[in-house]
Image (cartoon, rainbow, N blue to C red):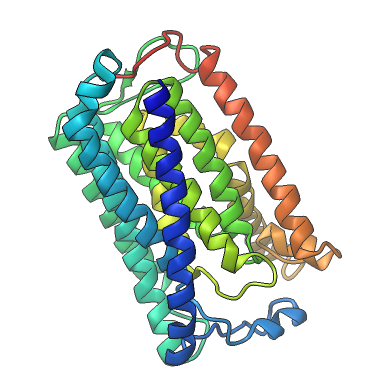
Length: 352
């Protein structure tokens, strides 16, 4: 178990260092290319000061997470069994879930990159259309689920108060695709205040790290640790006042990553408590649009997503990040306890 802890710590630290160091090279390069953010006129007026801040900063943590995850997983395949012995069960399926999950995150990151590049080239805050994004996102989710299905990883998930994974058959793929696309876009909507998306995802990744560690899944634990460390490395440059934005390149990648971590332990149900902030951001937009149409022009919030409502109410960006992060951390603790005390699964130990 000491080796287990050292491995996880190294994954987080190395990912942090890579992410932060990439920023030193990437930010000046983005400035040189004039890849700056165009701020919408309908947003808070003080956001105009951010005009020209480089986007696509998500490349920092994408590079870090990809490098650390690939290296740690390959090492896990070659030496894990000899070092950890009986703690490892069905390593092949775990490795498949890790690489498939990384593929899901990268696919969404590519979608985001195309969107960001389109915005930058056209010098406006419009990239891919909503329909185009959804088509690509469902294709990415479908490919991910197909890999899991064809590799024998099953169509099962754990649900509360059932002591074994439930096989939903074909409905698993339909429901999962909708959940993945929904969460990816929810994470995307959370990106709008300096440091917010990176901070929220850091706490989500830490929670998944603790849960997967308790389930003896070292590969997934290292994957989660790399995500947490890389997010911190990015926050070195993104915390208020931000020197770079993650852009859709980063936020869509993080959305795919969060889904991958949840599905890798067969517990997408945990996205409800752990992703509480993401979901509030998404539903605030849905409610705002619906209320606006029903009342012919009235607004439920001062502005959506909901972080802008608090911003328009006088909250500073730092306060929003701190409060939203504390809420995420609290629900992360609740999620860990739900798993650890058997509410989601009654049988302790490895999940496969």
